[in-house]
Image 1: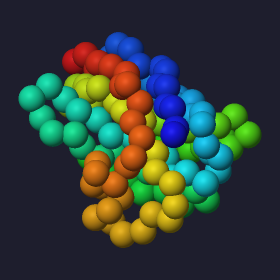
Image 2 (image 1 turned 180 degrees about the horizontal axis):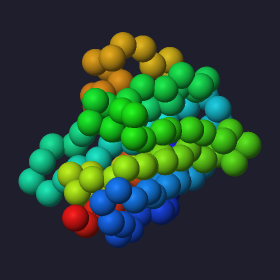
Image 3 (image 1 turned 90 degrees about the vertical axis):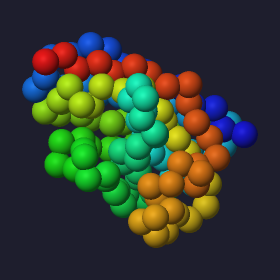
Length: 127
């Protein structure tokens, strides 16, 4: 089992920045692919970013160039640095994890791929 806890959500003005953190426990962190999904009211969960057990990263089109995912294996933590935030980025952001290799674009963006989910943290971007 893996437990995920997110930190760092809040209210920010459009154009601003936030950094989300997700702390993992229960399994060797370095073996996990870690990612972020988000869900806005009335919408389906949307893939944001993933970082594999190495350093390879992959981003959803809506956040590419503005968000950066990174990990610190010594701290068992994954981060999502969000810059140039827009009102349409308003959502609950979920940290996710899956063990083993993660290959294929379709697999990375599918929420069913990920075995572990955090409780979510609210990000609100005001215009």
